Length: 223
Ligand code: CA
Image (cartoon, rainbow, N blue to C red; front, side, top):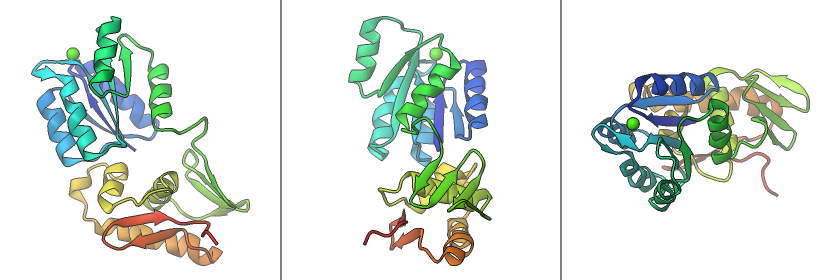
C-alpha cells in the first residue's frame, strides 16, 4: 500500500514516513503543493495524508486530483487549524478524515488502518488459505508455503483487493519502491512465481489474468 505524505515541516514529514515504512507501507514525501501534485500525477496512492497550509498553497487542492485518479484513494488532512469550521470545510472539500496537530502517531496509524479497512489483523484468511503479511507467510491447511518477497506481496495485495481487478500499474505502485524504474515485466515474473509455488503444488488457481486490465484474486473459485 502506498501513501503520499504532504507536509512542509521536514522533521514531521520524515518521522511520519519512517514510522509508516516500518509498518510496511510504501511512502513518498512531498514538502510543497507542487511536489504533491507531481507525485499524484505519476503514481497511484491508496492514501494521501496532506497538511493544509503549504508554503506554495492550499494542501486541500491535492484532494480533487487524487480522487480524479481513483475514487477509492483516501485523503486525510492534518492541520494545526483546530476549530470546528476548519474540520467541516476540509471534509466538505472532499477529505475523508481530519486530524488536528499535534497528534499521537499511534492514533494516526489507527485512523489510517481504519481508512484502509485492515481490521484488527493484517492476516487474510480465504478458504483453507491464510496469508500473513507480518510473517510473510502463506499457509494452506496449516502447511507453510514457500512464497517470499515481491511475489508474496503481489499475492497479499491481490487477496486484500479480491473484489476487484488490479492493474499492473497499481501493483507496481503499491509494492515497488521506485515503480518507474522497473519494467511491468516484473509483475509477470511475480505472478509466475505464485503459480509455480502456490497453485501448482496445491492444484488450485489463485490469480486470474484479465486481458488488458490486470489480475484478480480468484481463490476459491466460485462454483
Ligand atoms: Ca504547514
